[in-house]
Length: 240
Image (cartoon, rainbow, N blue to C red; front, side, top):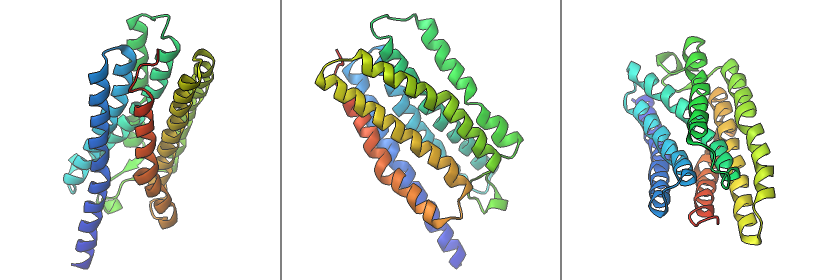
């Protein structure tokens, strides 16, 4: 009975943490789309929409505990978590090409390529047991070290390095004190969010470490919402 009570309390605690981003990310996406309809706004809104979708899927995985659907929803959530943050790169690229008006096919192709790259989550997570989430793990998601290293390599190659490149480009393109401030805020918050993603993968490997777990939870509860708000705040008004 005691173990069952503790298990129920843990489920409720996780649900509360994961339901909050659904509301604020949906709100940010709604406000941005209401303000304007252009490629840059669509891209940034996609980040918030997919972030909310990630947490919806994560919550569904908890609601379907003790069934195969729990794993299905969870691995989908991890996929969208990775794919979601790819929109930082796409958004930065759109801002760099703001005056050139690059063709839609390049924009669409970039999204498709990142969507394909993000499918590594399924191949490594399922076929190589990179993600375990069943009765053997006491229904707590666990990542393997192999999955962690593979994920970090992908994060560095396809997110961190491109974001560093585009960050320097953005700082060179946009001039003026106010614009510079907003661009710098976006860049800083982008890297904060990427650090949270990095930490998430490690957290799922070190799931039994309470000290690291407390550190990760502080990032999720305090840091991530603030950085998401500042990203939204940076572009709720026109850049030009």
